[in-house]
Length: 354
Image 1 (cartoon, one colour):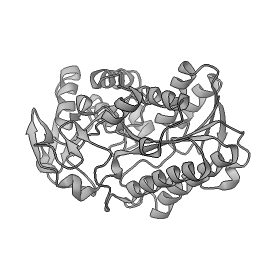
Image 2: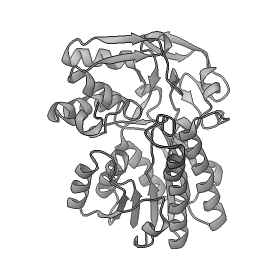
Image 3: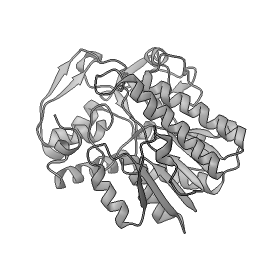
Image 4: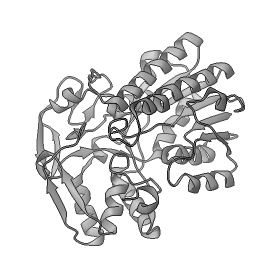
């Protein structure tokens, strides 16, 4: 089986590649990347050592895909993954659209050309910001949780039918549009297509950035005694995200590669750790203090655009359809990040220069 992974030298792409090499007999992996992210070269060297054929490709440019070899599946793991992209002054809104939407269209055309299946890694940020902000929350053990169940949500997390009505951020809009196009390509051209809406992917080797890899960022900052603050929501640090190790994501992808025949309604699922892996910033701080000792965290009631108090994805649909349950819990994920942070004292300077 020939598998092309876009964004192969990013955290998710490289981790999925390594896991598939171990679990899919006879897999021939190809990877493409633009290599612009800090730390990409580290993953590039390891993937080459493992026998992954790597190609430089800017997915915005159709000519960059012309010389990629044929494949049986495309896994689209390339994106600008920041909800602040296009509005924070680091990248223009047009660049965001080109990377996240045009890049997916070009990969879909590549899949169509070679009659390949397509798996899109999407995000929890496709959901309506006003609808999420309206979920009634209560605090327990230093973390927010829904006070009751409602349309498309419960204490177990959001379901796939929660509102995606705008506004969802420019980033969320590019991913939601990519989802729709991927499913339409699949139906129009008879290609197996799957969409996996991911929670926060986390693990060793993730580039620690507050807008992308919050778990890795928080642990590395704590260990290095750099300044941290609880932003917004009263400065308590009660805001919550769930986490998922990309090896568990690869386990779901492996099932999809082996059984492509499903009705379109079943082709979109949550791939997330769910409520059992959810932690607030305050709870992460407690974990860090137990491992490394106390470190002050400032309280700052100011807010950033698109910040939300609670986003947890319920993966019950993936469990029902694919018999898929994450095997790596949040304790193991945090320990893996911490071990990596201790072995790499300059990781923050590499991945998120301050």
